[in-house]
Image (cartoon, rainbow, N blue to C red; front, side):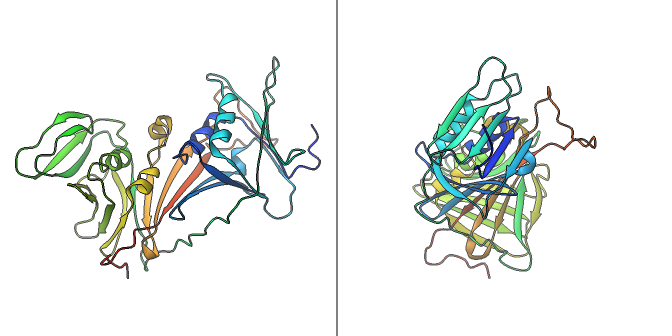
Length: 340
């Protein structure tokens, strides 16, 4: 098929890596997305209720071929679930899979085609549409002279401090089944073994109070607190100096506290595939002006070990990374602590 008339023709040799990156922002079964194309790569954007936005950055370096010929930056909408499911049909475990992505087709479709199989060719067309709304630009800015941020990573021996409410029984908390505290509330140090997705599991367990989640970052002592206080109280503290292998970076010069809807906060971590969690290089959280929370993940889209692409100069590109960003607006309620 000729590339004439196409705004974009690109090929990727690790379809599963692309599927993993897109799955991380798929928090609903029926979910629309907007794709923006440019000479720098592809950006996929999803939003909900004008309060939560996620972006997946697929830079042109992730592709083994990337030919962009459009003027401006074409944008179109499609079903995120359909896009991910179509890509999954091209992914065959244990072998290299090269897929060509082309836009637009004769009827403005997004076209996908396998190009490395001698036995058969898989071909798919995805109907696109004009986006109904323009994606918000969250204009994330630091709240002051010092950016407020912290980075959570895996640790071989994770220990969090958890304020356990009176009479609360955990069905399962950090791998501890049937854990029942005594009559009086107290602070527990709970440990977890290797490959612990600390941030994801902490947010999952904060569902119990049935309320919004207050995130507090303070410099003395340097710590991050997640607290839910609906029909019960549950508080999880990330102490910087206690767990430097877990909280690997911390930057804060004043106390800041904001409250976020639980369902939006959970969406930032709940759909990250287990393969990504194992290879995660760290999840960075930042609080900007107005309390906007930015959560950043890195997803490896590494080439298959069975095939290596080296250019004419002998240069071999390093491991390729897809960047994922979530933006969450805080709840608006009287008495919220300002960040000024």
